[in-house]
Image (cartoon, rainbow over all chains, first blue to last red; front, side, top):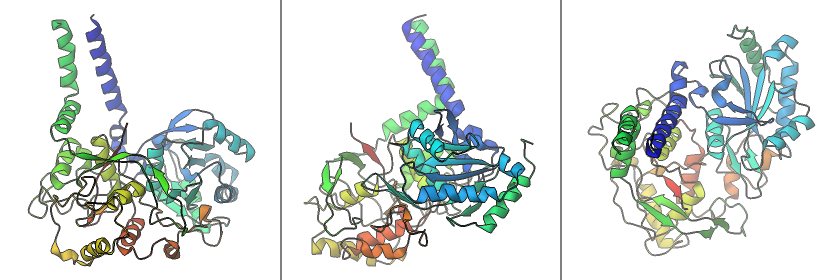
Length: 199
Length: 264
């Protein structure tokens, strides 16, 4: 086999692998309003690769934050914790939480792990994840969480929790930070009580 | 040599769609103009004595994307047809002025800028052109140039010209591309359509609103606009306010886009 043949075969294989991995193929069976119609590569606090659309099949609370965040993000984590304390232990066990960082530059897996340890987050039920900057914009747009990077490296952003059902539809959202949102907790209960493929 | 040709031919055949798209892109390569690096004070800067932000050189698409160009994109990427696109990416008005999913018709001329496209669709188009949406700062910096100066924002005649366009009733209908080039050879930044930028959301941020520090005021608020620099620059502020009011799946009859590229 000539070198040229080998190069051609490798190129063909790569092209077809990329085609097979493209989100539009995987997304075919999802509802039209599913956020998992979009997919992106994420990396969690342990350096493990995962997919944004990989949450299919179980409910997931999704929000965005960054590790070097002085006020809103600690409050966001507190609010999620207070909300999940309202659930039964069985419900809580089934609730997955994904927090995607705004800060693609600084939030390495090590930085995410440090935050998870500092806040004693229940990983891997809680996942802190980073994405590439272009994907951060898409995820924020899908979740409808406005944000802006400031000149000093901080991020101005809204504190919002979004609840996705197993099909990736946004079934509830709350921007009430530091307080319990009864409607949001009711939605959590409802989604966690519904039968899913994982039970 | 012969033996090497067969797998190559097979590869082209098997992944023919990809090849066709790549070739179509090569034939109708749109013009991009280099925009030199600069220090720039945005209308968004909140402090009166804000220091210029350094902005790297980049390339801006000479014209907004037209109906004809977007039609070719939809034909090559059928997942972006108006009858196929998931509702999570666009609202119901997406390309609704076209006569059919792959036909422009009388209400959408080929050399008019494409409008009624969402941010997600605009981004996907730019990716297909090996490009991206410009940031607001890149757009504003390019649009600050008149035909003969790189920053005409302080020129009263320039401001009046911009305001004249904003005063036109939108019922006059959309013009076509081919307007006057600015200093960098970029056209139709002002007088045709609004344009998506990559960071369209949260453009309006009060100086003390980092992290929305006050727990009783968690949301972005309109009064922040009052702290914007250079309040006389209504034309730009209208654009900022319009973009900030959008969600990524929204489309409007006056909102199109152009793409940008990093320079090596």
